[in-house]
Amino acid sequence: NAGVTQTPKFRVLKTGQSMTLLCAQDMNHEYMYWYRQDPGMGLRLIHYSVGEGTTAKGEVPDGYNVSRLKKQNFLLGLESAAPSQTSVYFCASSYSWGNYGYTFGSGTRLTVV
Amino acid sequence: GENVEQHPSTLSVQEGDSAVIKCTYSDSASNYFPWYKQELGKGPQLIIDIRSNVGEKKDQRIAVTLNKTAKHFSLHITETQPEDSAVYFCAASISKYIFGTGTRLKVLA
Image 1 (cartoon, helix red, strand yellow):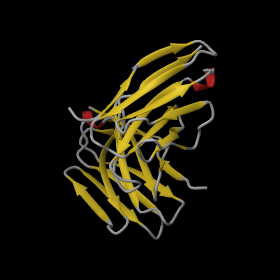
Image 2 (tube, helix red, strand yellow):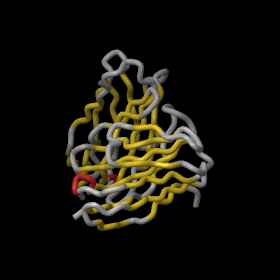
Image 3 (cartoon, chains in turn blue, red):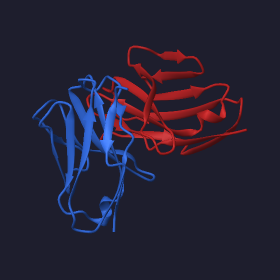
Image 4 (cartoon, one colour):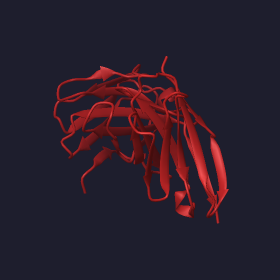
């Protein structure tokens, strides 16, 4: 089925470790997004991309890096994980900018101990 | 800055009753208002949306209304069923989305 696939689904990291979250979409969408979801705070935008080879900062970008080397993939990296980065991370993609629905992945639950 | 307030944060209704969730946005230039449903352990899923040139939109048991003057929009679910139990998010958008903080809806059988 067409959609957004995130890997891994769960991960436990020790403070200071690094990891990369993978997001892949097969809908040929130009726009891709990384959000984090924390209790009581809704969905907050980390980084986004408006096309292959482009990235931009969102609302809470500190401690994260991203890359969009291929149109279908959007990678989120944590260089040195901190307990404050314990969260559920969602990737999304959309056909258009701002006035179109997003398709979300099923999320990655990350715990940093 | 841009802000979307969503109320209530939790809502319990009896099966068959109606549920209403309200959102207020701050940026009058916002022109797109989607609603997402998030079931436990899953990502948000678009259930209905409305654009600023429309006052109301309906899809079976779900409807959304928009009042541009007051800068608020609402989700209405009629004849609620247990499978409607989920967290619902509103958003307002010019370019990037601004999400509300979510409403946990419980439909009691």
